[in-house]
Image (cartoon, rainbow, N blue to C red; front, side, top):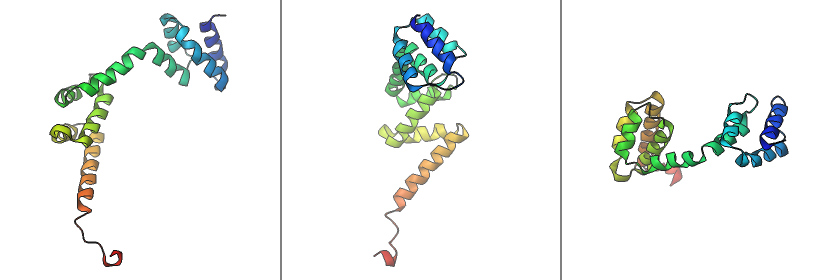
Length: 152
């Protein structure tokens, strides 16, 4: 029995009952030895689901996963904003995450640009920006109010 046949047999066996941890680990260890065609067949199989499918995806696209994240991190903020405007860019979630991190870091005065683009984006983005502004206001106001007499 080949590695591919073994993984398929185990997938069929555990499809309805859930995976045994030892068997899942054995199948995961065999994934790197499979050909790309076998990996694609596994990924598309109705019997493969959950953790195994995620791991097959990781093995299939390991070289591209890290590059995409690195590319987004290295982009200037203006280019990220242009990509964010293009809702079909395919990297929307990564770009949103990076823009939020840059908003919090506020390097090079990018906060206002990011605020502007999030203000005209989805409702979730608008709510996120409002919550960030509230946090800033509450943090700046902490030191301005006199403490009550019972805390002195």
